[in-house]
Length: 493
Image (cartoon, rainbow, N blue to C red; front, top):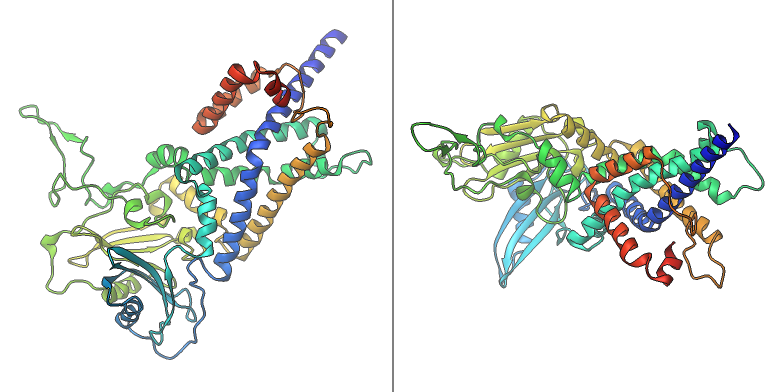
């Protein structure tokens, strides 16, 4: 009985040190990214609530009457007018957030073979231009770019996706390690004071226990934007069905089979089969920011039918009036049609900081020739994953109310402290002067893992492809190089 007890204890100890080593290496890679994400997330949170991401919180004096949309748009266009500027036009209008804030106009124009793409702030009462600047050029978008891909484009997106995936592994191993020491949920969250215990270890373990579930939630909602797990896996299976409005044709692979004749593509009668399908993401996500609601990003746009052309075509002013009659209030966005089959789009969603509640999300598409409503998509129309992501993104971005702003700010600071505490713990047990090594846990010991973790961890890696690739690359490097080169083996193992 004693031998069995000692064998079990030795096995538990071996697994503990193995998971500690995994936690250590994952933390070395992940922690810098978590600090970057928490810092930039905190900066964006503060900027959107102080000035607005496009300075849309700029205050104006409230007056008795407002200028017409045409007058405001004309002032915005005039702000970029010059002898070498041509074809200036409004492509997007953002209504004032409140009675005492500015209206925004996005103006695009051609200039000396190049282009202008400006956001123009206009006083809605006097039609006076208050400010004009290149779109996505302020500090919010700098932090947003770092937060999205660390300024490395697709490579950066994959790196952040890998970091977020490995963070899930970090959370699981970290909770196990702290549980192994405490053996009690209460002492995990509120450890007893012990004079010999490392303060930084208590901070790291306790904070990790408190924020682990929230950090896991942030990883999942953040990964939903990522290029592989989000775009290729989750969005592809959870997009809003465009067939609900019966305008966009079915995919070319959907065939109506006539056994007497050859199979032919099934298409909409109002549209040629050669029409290139335009999604909400392609139409509305113009630039680095994500403006289309997550569940609609890969959904095809409806199309305008020239056969419905009226003598008097809808204008920005008439569409704005129509938006108000449809019930849009406060800040909402109107997008001009793109091309002959494009539509007017009225959008209001929490992801774009239009309002607080994601349950009020709404996107309306209007035929550019007839003014008829082609689609009216609301939160209740989303599928289960779409609703989860709309609510999850609102929590992730802190748009719900002042309490979510405060909670997110505190969370970001706690994540930074958690990472710093982890580095301090490593520094406290750093190598001696004569030993060139990272001094990982269980140094020079053979890795051992229980069958439960041997099943769980590969399953987690398979769910998150970039984590699986990272683990496979590390294992391959270990086999080919680290285990065969003495100085690498000393440094890392």
